[in-house]
Image (cartoon, rainbow, N blue to C red; front, side, top):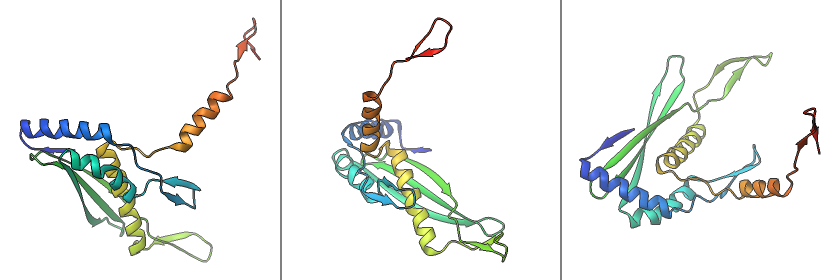
Length: 171
């Protein structure tokens, strides 16, 4: 993580970020992942959760993408996320991910190579990385109704386990 600004600028930045975080409600889980049969917060939902609190406290964010290639043809995608304050302080962090291309298989089904990612695979990886990078640097979490229901169900179904004099569990 890189910090940019004078001591006064950074003090104003962190005071505003703390105030904004106090009013952020969380990102709604507005999208479905059919493969994992789960819901998640889209990048749009994260932006929406940040919009008003950031505006009210003089904060903004921007993200940039860079690519590089490793030997063997594997792509590395670098996502840089910057939070900035109207008085000049800013913080930048970067995340590197590897968008996976399609596997090339021989007639026996063995993987013999990997194609470069398609534009759709690249876009999916970029959106994924942008969403998680922005959530991490801002401290925002998805609203987890499922987790809250699981905690309530666990609390309603608790059993007390006692031990007998010889240490074996008893009910």
